[in-house]
Image 1 (cartoon, rainbow, N blue to C red):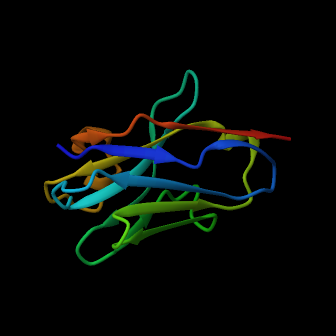
Image 2: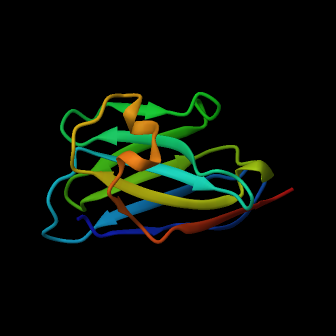
Length: 127
């Protein structure tokens, strides 16, 4: 199990940008991949982005592609998610998740393929 902590959420205005951070506890085993998901009230938790730990390949939700950048800072053991041009529809709790098992590209979009989850960080976008 990987202990994950999200940070960087908050209340912003439409058009603003945010950088979310997902930090793994020191000493944790390297995951195969880290993903970001979000869940709005009454909605299913949906895939946002993911990054493979070994080769740094990145994957993005088709609907959000172009507004997102996911990256990794090895020294800080942290994965970042930069979201640009935020809209009210982006309002949700954003979760960081990790899988220590290898997954296909499609598998990285599925919540049940991740064994470790952070506590979530709230992002609220007002118009």
